[in-house]
Length: 488
Image (cartoon, rainbow, N blue to C red):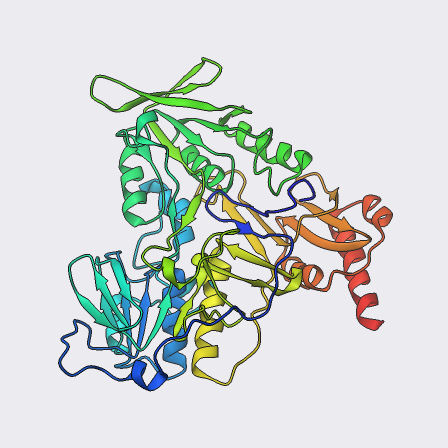
């Protein structure tokens, strides 16, 4: 995004934050007690966890994939403890704004169906799976304090936990409207966990009018689900078109038309003044800065997310992108403490900058890379390729299922090919190099080509792409450029 030199942010709540220049060298270390001290346990102390060698704080995607990697390396049984604020074992969080929101007659997703690691084709890790693997799970008890010198954690319930190695996987929390403008009114929803989604579903079952605040991933996915509930749905956002941080105006227009064909209305370039409530205290309208109001009985707000760094602030934060700063093996400045997933500010090697990525793909891969680096001789720097996707209108009876994928960096000039019937592709070219590519409704083989193109960044003939008569022809041109680059 040439117009945004200091950040890349592709999703309200799922984003990639990238300053344009940052040293990728290992971050400075803070002096702490020796490893032998860290591995020893004070006999006189009483701790509330039995498994103390490795402790993961957090119960999201990253924690689930970390657990699987510990098991694969034979280091979980009797050694690994996971402490989480959730009442559930780790699950694939993207489902919450997709199939989880389908009406009951549309076969919605429900646990235990989407526990990690089914999203990446792995085993479904139910609570029983963790017991069978000898992993200690502490549910509904968020960590509230850490003592780095003593290597202990305190939880909300007052438990004292001991760790040898600590992996922080706390993810993000939803950004909220201030209470003074109605951010906490009954009928106003944010989606970050199963409880949030359950609360929204309860409202959708009674609702007639829904307002979705934000035109990013969450807005698009929630609005698409609302169509299945046959609700009067309006999406409000301050930008001029949908998903403005990724979509070009032309591409956005195609998706907007699809939503409008399904009865969804748009209010673009709008700023919200406050949310109004009725005599019972429930939200009744969204008041805009221009003085107009949109009646509603349910509001979903998806204005982004904040890294959940508390109580680990002293570990070392990155003030530019937010989150806990780590190196290419996800080590923080404190030996024996790691951070993975949404909360980690890591070296994005391919673009030579520091980034924080809020996406399930990074959560999975960062967890696996970190644990392999911790337990084996694996010393390679994490080499992540930015990837984003969305799937909407996938419920039974939908006239058009939508699934697009994007890889790379959306910088430079965009070349769009295809008419969205059903395919469309957008290629981003900068200084003659293919930097990023988005494809809608591709075949498995075509989707598999995208990361190869984005990672290799081949030189490409922009005029040939512009003259391509179809998406298939454009991808053939890109693939030929890839082969030419490999032969050089």
